[in-house]
Structure formats: C-alpha cells, structure tokens
Image (tube, rainbow, N blue to C red; front, side, top):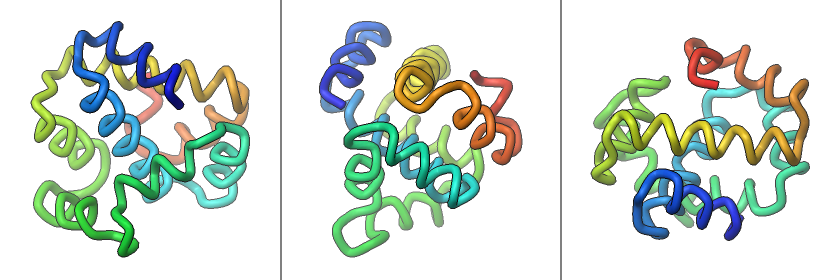
Length: 127
C-alpha cells in the first residue's frame, strides 16, 4: 500500500496522509457497496487492502466512516462527500480514483475489478 500512497500523493499533488485516507475511504466504499464474494477476492489479491478498509471503518467496526455515511449518504455521491471532507476537489478525486483502480487492476486483474465496478451503480464510468 505504501507504494500506492506515494504514487497517489505525487500524481494528485496531495500530502501522503490525505492520499492514505483517500485510499482507505475508497476501499471501505468498495467493501460496503460491492458484491461481497468479488470484493473479498479482490481484497485477497491486494496486500493491505482489507486493513486499509478496516482503518476507514474505525476499530469499533464502523465509527468514523459510518458517521460520515450517515451525514453524506451512500453510493458514489456519499464517497465524493467524504473525499471532499479531506479537502479534495473533483480533479484530485478523479486522479486518486484512477490510481487506486490501476493499482488494484495490476494486483487482482481486469476481470475481478470489472465485476466489482459493474455491480456498483455509476462506478464504471470513472474507471
């Protein structure tokens, strides 16, 4: 995950901590919104993905992320709201999203990423 975070920080021009939190939020979003079997397989193929998603959810199994979901709603718009709360603009969000999915594709393969993206309304248009 550290190489992904460094890549995102450089590509999006954000601090590494913001890149890390963004990755955690995106992976937690995939876990929440995606089909469980495919997301589990994807996380198994991407070292550190499950831990990153857990970090966004908080140690109590929901904490901060659930509060943000309640405040911003679910789906892609909810994710965009959460990323905006980190100070990210749309251009930065797109760059970060593309970097995350390129990394995940490298580790898990096109087919698995495609299955997860196809199951989440609107996500495929951002890949």
